[in-house]
Every structure is written in C-alpha cells, then in structure tokens.
Length: 290
Image (cartoon, rainbow, N blue to C red):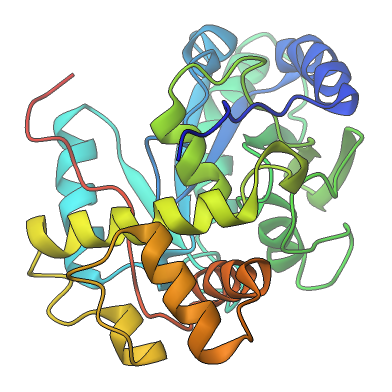
C-alpha cells in the first residue's frame, strides 16, 4: 500500500531550534547524541553549520540495542570519516562515566585562553543536542546520578532549554530534541518512526509495522552475520520469508490478536523498541565514503 509522507515538526521544536541557535554562541562544547540503531538517520544536516568551529563530541546512545560487531563497524567507519564516536547506554549507565571528563577536556582551551589574558577560569559550557527521544535527558540524569530532568521513552518530553550545573567545572544546556522541518529522506523518516524517535502523530502504526517487517526481511538477507535467525519467527512463531510486511501483520493479527491489525502493529513496534526482539540495528556503515 502507498504511504503518505512522514512529517513531524511541532511548534515547540521550531521555537527550541531558534533558541538553541542563539545559545550555541555561548557554549564551548557541543555533545551530539544519536540513536545507535540509526546513527545516520538521527543526524541533523544543519549540525555542522550550527557547530562551526566549536568542539563536538559524538555520542551513539542505546548501544545495548545493537550487536557488538555492528558497534565495532560503526566505530571504524566514523573514525575513517575523521570522527571519534562514543557509545553509551543511558538506561544502564554504560559508557556514561567518561563523558564529563571528555566534555571538560574538549573545553580546556577556553580556560587556557582566559588564563593567558589574566582572567579566572570558569565552568566549561556544553550543550546536548539531538533528535527527539535519542536519550539526551536520560544521559543528563546519569551524569548527575539523580533524576533532575524529565525523561521518558517517547519524543517531545523536553520542551524548554535549561542550564544544569553538572559540577564546578562543567555546565550543561539541556535542549529539546530538534529535527529538520521537512523530512526529505523518507527512508530515514521511516526508521525514526520505527525507533520511536518521532511523534506518533506523524505516522500510521500499521504502515510502519508492515514496513519494519519488510526492512527486517531485507536485512536478514543482506546481513546474515547479524540476523542468523528470524527475530519475528523466534518471537511470534510465524516465518516471514514468503510474506510481505502487510501479509505478515495480517497473519500475526489473525493468530494472536483476533484480527486486530492495530494491536498487532503496536505489539511488534513495542517489542522492537523495548529490545524484546533482540539487538537489531536498522542501519549499517555505508560501503562507499560520502
């Protein structure tokens, strides 16, 4: 079935983007957070323009939701592009401990220049940016070792910019998730919907679930090193090899949910988002450099 374009740009994001661009003039370090399952789809194309010459740390959160081998592939690929990715799991706190020191180290040049001018040092100012629901607030709470900012596994929870004192040496600006006003790459938009990195008002669950199944079939064929067995057959007992995404969804609804397609679609998406289906990346490093 044909699917309408996925677009989501609520008013609070437009306002936050304007405020963020103003605040970026005041920061020493930009911490860009992406979803490790879809690190390319969760890269805002305007980040290089916004950041300019400011130091930037690249964080790939939710590393627990992709296999170690895929994580290593991304590490190699990003380093080939001249970037060093840092992998984190904000839910369990893995990889988070070193972020404070990395951010402070990235901003050390600011205080050295202040000392050279006879000025006292000040806390390094960092900002955490990224798409909605990639785990920015959860990372901040982990850094502070307490729940200071509201965090939930849904997009649009953080709606205002807020400065937070991490330590005497580091201040962090928590910003709402930002994304392009127009999602021109609909393959990337679909992945945002599957991963719950975009508001549910932007898409139809049944269409997204069916597309997710088709994507899994494609990945199962082309990345057998990760998909040695069918995650859906293991979970639901239904083989998807001879089915389209739509027919698989219908078969699952008939077998387990009294023909309720919406319920079946929500269950598949929920199982993926919670990791019940296993460690499933939806993107792999490009074979050709950009």
